[in-house]
Image 1 (cartoon, rainbow, N blue to C red):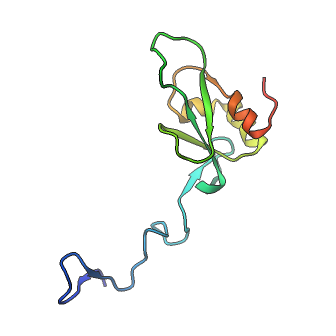
Image 2 (cartoon, rainbow, N blue to C red):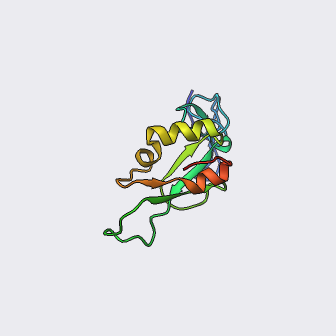
Image 3 (cartoon, rainbow, N blue to C red):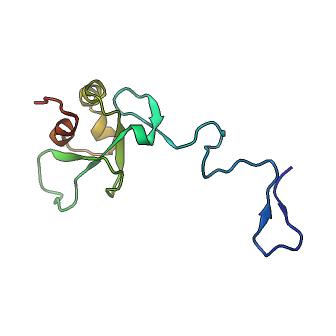
Length: 125
């Protein structure tokens, strides 16, 4: 049985019978929060367990050369396209080896991941 209008209620009020509240569950009704894919290990996890990283491209001219810095966004609030990563050295090294940051962030230039390495406590050249 689908949604039906309540009799006598204000316009826009609905009496939903047997429905799942989509604000707390995904479309299958199994997970309580959104999931994201780690760019390193390609495993799926909740967004709260992953570290979001963004490219710092603001203020860069099109003719500037050099790597684009990638910054960690632990509060998940920075503007722009983000990539998600398990906060572990193994996933970080896999992402760097596969050049997954540039691909996930849709960048054509090389990336500088030193800020993310510092955040994770990883020694990276």
